[in-house]
Amino acid sequence: AQSVTQPDIHITVSEGASLELRCNYSYGATPYLFWYVQSPGQGLQLLLKYFSGDTLVQGIKGFEAEFKRSQSSFNLRKPSVHWSDAAEYFCAVGARSNYQLIWGAGTKLIIKP
Amino acid sequence: DTAVSQTPKYLVTQMGNDKSIKCEQNLGHDTMYWYKQDSKKFLKIMFSYNNKELIINETVPNRFSPKSPDKAHLNLHINSLELGDSAVYFCASSLRAGVWDGYTFGSGTRLTVV
Image 1 (cartoon, rainbow over the protein chains, first blue to last red):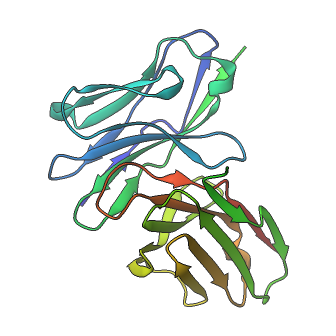
Image 2 (image 1 turned 30 degrees about the vertical axis):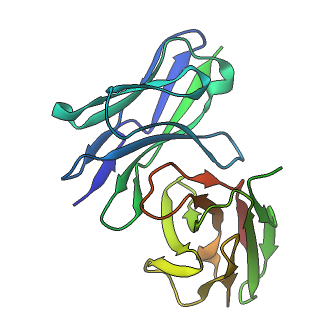
């Protein structure tokens, strides 16, 4: 069955430190992969997406993600976090068969001053 | 200027009431969605319309009924509200079903049933 796992319910990092949020997926074919961010009280905003080609994709707000087929992973990274990055982050996989996005449970990012 | 707008932003109502949430998008997208986000932030797809045709109808109570008068609008009507319906409901749109360009979300409607 198709699924997306975000192993970390929450992560705490210091402002200025680097960040990596993990995402693992289970999908038979080449997946469409997405990262979304949800700031408190807001809707979800697309950070970046991967369809094919270069496995390192750049997104908005200084984020990047790397697709690793051998590990079924699509981890999100940022070299230096800012307090405004505190939010909930969701990984998602596009299932071609039924037009649906399959969502991870989200990772809450907490920034220490 | 708002791409996907939902109204109302907050809705507090008593059990047993009927309420509606409205959603409009001005992106020219063909496909629209309703999601429910529970208190643990889990996102559950409820419905999706592609150019006014229902294409996703997940297992939700019959009390929930979507209506799409045109491809720019997707409303959600809820009958006989229950405490468990309390959640944040998000509307979203995408270019068209099967084109994986990403979704654009509204800012959500926080429904509280008391």
